[in-house]
Amino acid sequence: MNPDVVVFNRTDVERTVDVTLVDSSGEELLAASTTIAPDDAFERDDVLPSSGQVTLAVAVENGPTAEREFDVSDDSSLQARIDEDDVEFDEA
Image 1: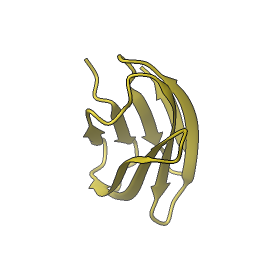
Image 2 (image 1 turned 60 degrees about the vertical axis):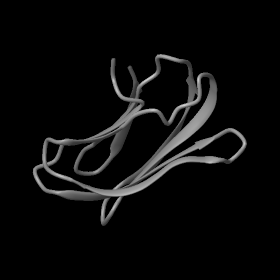
Image 3 (image 1 turned 90 degrees about the vertical axis):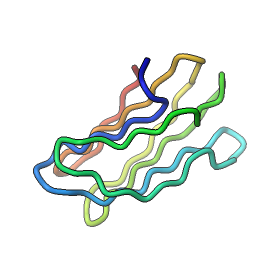
Image 4 (image 1 turned 45 degrees about the horizontal axis):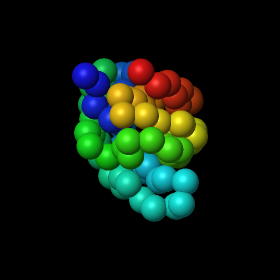
């Protein structure tokens, strides 16, 4: 089973990233600042509610920033991929 939140660094340089997850009422479920090596990932488990709507935001230092809303369930895994000039989201 995949972790609740995964942020992939698909660039060839180390990236410093702020990852924030909030629920529909604005409660912060995750707030992390981390450094991700090239072709590596930040993972966090047990942060998603069993259902409802959440917003995942990814802000790369000196790089792209993006956010996306998701409707989650028990088996959701939210994924973000950092490229050179954008952040793409997916749910697995």
